[in-house]
Image 1 (cartoon, rainbow, N blue to C red):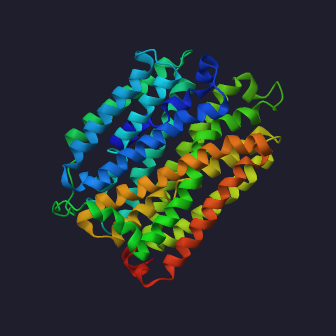
Image 2: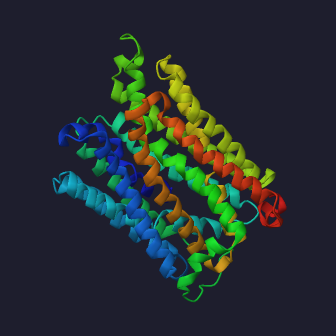
Image 3: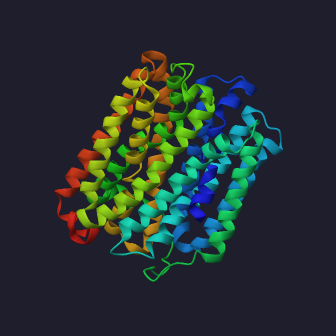
Length: 396
């Protein structure tokens, strides 16, 4: 619950992008920076955390709680300070830095409570992250707010509640490792060990697709619903409101996907589960643009399937790293993995509006299918390696 509430900060500004585009006279490319600066801030914060081994040396629940409170403050500062676009980007960067103390640290806390069911446990956590990331769209769609400022205030309040919750109840579980000594070089272990390289390459393929889909699916749905008949419920309800509602459902569907994939991975294997998920999501990336001029229900259905599959495998890459690396430096390995992944998302998020300008929405999302293809290959190689015996209690 703490993860769900705190991670609502991630897409708080993205959810109100149409209003900000109009008020600040932004281009589509400029609007992308509302999400990209969060990614950059997260990467900066994650690299600092990994370099200093913060998630392993400091008490994780305090790191999580303080980070959530700081992130909430920066998020609320955007409307509170009546910030324009440049200042908002600075606040979004700082919010991203704070979230580097939430997501990876939350994974470490959850991992110390799980062993045989670690895939399910981390799947539950990523599911909470997914629903939390989608929640600003729900707030905007059903909150009854005509302005964008209240959305950011409500989301900041949710993050404060998440910080308080984890401070009170976020103790480490029985499978914790003793706090290690500081080793600045341990973050490089992710690149030296072959099995970790393959797991991280699979994660990078997954991340190439994930955040670009989450960022741009609302605007894609606006474009798709604009072609619907005037009598369609998607038009009578309001195009932007309908797009926000379906975007929330599509992103939040990944919460269910993460939970089910976690249970499947514990029984069937992490590598097989991630390959199945990436094949499904990559296929959706190729198909959804072709349906943009079709019936809105078809587009919405594909968005829901895509949202379900695109994040279902996420926790299993983290689970794999936690099983392949040294337990006492688990937090550092997880933080390093997320830093690399979120750095890559900056490229794919910016790529989509460029692709829209060249080939339109019909083919723009197809560029994201490259990631799942590469990720599936990496996890297939990991499945065929001797190190696969260390995954999911020997299931690979």
